[in-house]
Length: 64
Image (tube, rainbow, N blue to C red; front, side, top):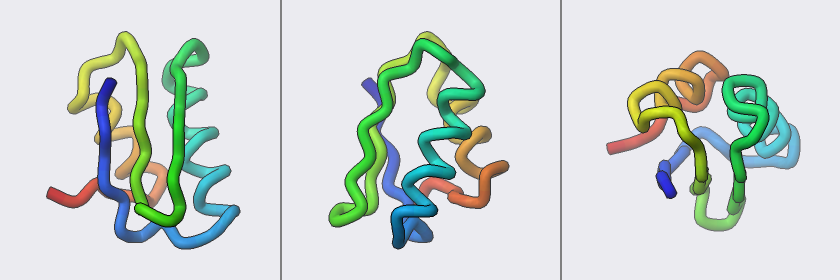
């Protein structure tokens, strides 16, 4: 399970965009988003750096 802090995520639209981007990269990914904590947890066969690239391309670059 990979966890990313997404400081630019602030609303339901952001949540949907993050989820959709990750699911399009890996249709079998388990995606858990927390708007309150501004985090996303992803269970995926893709490597962490590839998931980070997907999030960045969607407009939500991970912090740290």
